[in-house]
Length: 345
Image (cartoon, rainbow, N blue to C red; front, side, top):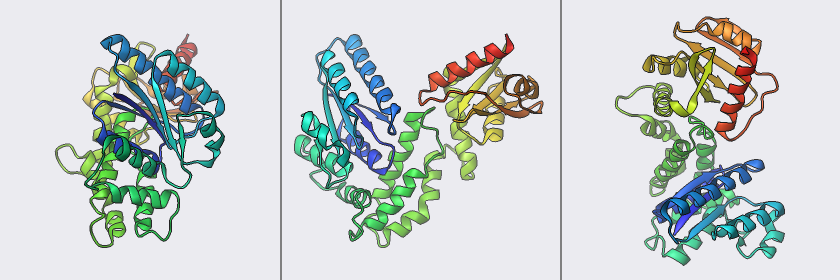
């Protein structure tokens, strides 16, 4: 069975994926916040299933698993129709009361308002796949359940509070640009947190060690400050994926980041490690952008031309008027490139 697992972007959502990623070998993970992103990710999943079926020409079962997300009636009907076309199964495990009507209408829509999605997923894995019979993961599931449905009397409630902030505060890797690596960080932190549950004052000790745990994830060879380790890690991601991220301006070649921040360190490091590139550009969800160069192109003039901005020849910024944001990076890149081309034409 191939699993395509879409889940929410909070502790409960990643808690579900923490479990399924352990339980299944053939699994692809996707994440979405509410709104239009849900359908966009489901479209990605449907495309992935079609591609798998075409390449391998097999009759394996394909399961679209959705956790900690409730669909609209329109989305549910659309998904059922599309899944039927490609012979894929659907299972939705959720706990939000707003999905009660849909749970009555669709047999694959499983709802339990008395449990977190992580606990619902855990129970399903135990029942269907004999998962975790030794109870290795039961306490981390209990901690996530306690905070997500606010069981303040549970002994793991305070630990769950730390875990909640641990995930919401893990923004070092942009999830739109590098979804796999962002998810890997969060699953690593959940697994690391699980190991604290056997010690006294586990919530305090975890809170004390979060900085150290993140450094452990980002460290490649030598130790450094967390900020520098993150910069080196993200720069490596940019370098490894630069073909996908490449844009051009008046014959100059650059790379486009999205909402990465820390532009001076990331931009300068990337340009030093990739001398075939002329500029670095990072744009955020509001259309504000930062530019860096290494004496290859005057980015102050570039910023003025494309975004009514300015600055220094090697460091500048501006804003794209009427910028159209997206949670699909390829759409962001397409918009920016077309905008630049229009401005310089």
